[in-house]
Length: 140
Image 1 (cartoon, rainbow, N blue to C red):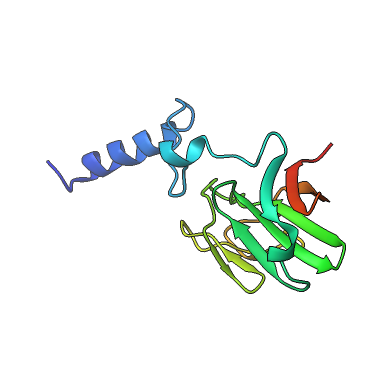
Image 2: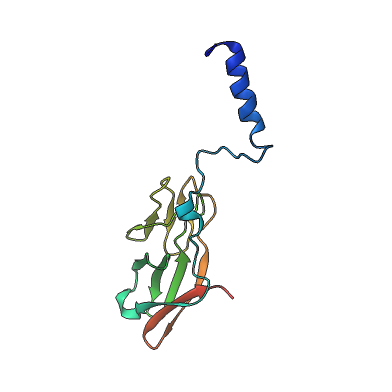
């Protein structure tokens, strides 16, 4: 009979055994469309360096990268794949990145977490300007 102590105990036992059986039941899991997203695995051209003004940040959603221009010749770049559930971040306001999946927020200038549920910073990328074009890729 549903609602009986026996039925409830069976449900609770199944939930307790699920992790041991490899059936991870989590509220925040990655889904198929986000599971294959990652930071660039090779250098990518992002566009003209003068598109990012000193003190500003720019989001490159096609490459899952954010670039911040710290000084005239100093840039910082980070992957925009959220470290919480691997969702691609698609919102930048000033230097604050916000993940659409669970609301994690990050600082685009240093990759640090501003608001949980994420606890790990964004992955840092190597960034340079070649012939007036911003190029970002994995750290060496």
